[in-house]
Image (cartoon, rainbow, N blue to C red; front, side, top):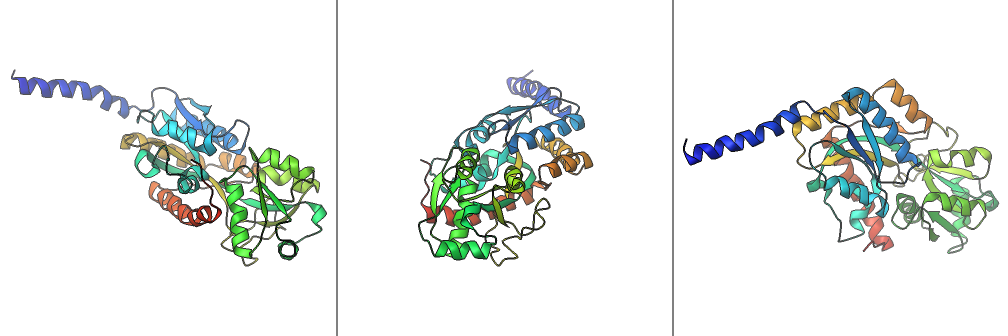
Length: 322
């Protein structure tokens, strides 16, 4: 055998096992990275998705928490993992659409380093105020705030978080001067609002719903195109004339770039089956969240649109994560 023929034979022998392995994917457990703290909404969504994927694929899907840097850490770990389908990630809105406008040192480029599988879930957010403000509608609040520039504090889960940028959208659209108080997570912000130290928050409906129902906070508007099923009496910002104030939170399933097409197809097919199932809809409904299956192209177009929305807001606030 010639040297050239030998090289080709060896190459084929090396490639064959890898090709064979992708044909019977998955043949071992899959790791689903959640780039947020355990116990939060993303963690709950991931565990519901993992259970469904495990049943569809016939392999265990293990949820692993890799929190940090506003959701960047877990996504970066995924981007740098072996592109074999055994490491996937439930990426959040900020990491893909808002944070890229805040830093010149992004650890990954989602368009080059990730393969988008499907959008998973959208979560409506709601504007709440402390009852001591004595306002019951968005219009009342806007009038109250305009009469007190720089006197009202709003809390967020951190500078550059969606909970921060959502209020910046409202400030820009309505001409408000509110003072930002960033926290390390939305939980501490809510605790401070219960104590009367801040007066305004925009955050996920599922997290705030118990406080709204107890009367601790007043819900003025859902910052979405439509009302939230869990809050049917609370109008949306769109119907109140502020359609630009749309801050739905969302999560999508991604894998490392260069993952084989047939592996991505298997993950996508299983994901769509789970996301359109009655069981998952029931679980997400309990969290007041909307299953949002999509094609990779639809997911990519959605992320780009979100970047277009958040980029100017980030630049206007001057938020930097360097």
